[in-house]
Image (cartoon, rainbow, N blue to C red; front, top):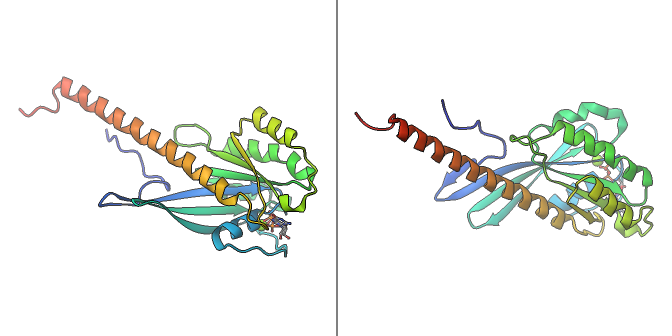
Length: 220
Ligand SMILES: Nc1nc2c(ncn2[C@@H]2O[C@H](COP(=O)(O)OP(=O)(O)OP(=O)(O)O)[C@@H](O)[C@H]2O)c(=O)[nH]1
Ligand SMILES: [Mg+2]
């Protein structure tokens, strides 16, 4: 029986002279108009526009990160349409995601109330290979508006009750905390990946030892 696991999207593509190139798929989800596209655009192009152009279905953008001298990461940011009219159709885009940013608009309470729905949908549909859930950050966007309809206490409580380890106030307009939020997710994905690789190598070692003890590795 082969010990090798099937390759995932997030696996190493290139491994030459100790150089690694990784591909991670991140989801950006939340209600319509909360600023998902604006966040992705700010992060990948460094631009912001105050025009609202509804996302149809889903869109994606790529950001390349030179994480350390040996690691290049290609981040695929999947910007999922928030409008109800696209409903569950967009969930097909969740496949193979390894992290997610869940966005709401601090000036619209309804978008915060929807976060729970997005979260349970995400947790139900996306898990990692070992069955654990993917890292998620909650983004309280449009902080620049200064008309917060949601108290910080409510956000903290929500995160605690729903096991979201990290949330950020963000502004795509003012470029506030977007890099930090993405950095946090990448770090978490990498950490999980390292743990995964260590577990794999321990499993491999144990199997080799068992094989040795059974004598099947010995030459006749
Ligand atoms: N003031 C302010 N406006 C923002 C910010 N982020 C987005 N917007 C504006 O909010 C509107 C909606 O932003 P989008 O990024 O298109 O929203 P979306 O979440 O992608 O919406 P859907 O594609 O319909 O799901 C646009 O007019 C943006 O310019 C922000 O941080 N501050
Ligand atoms: Mg959009």
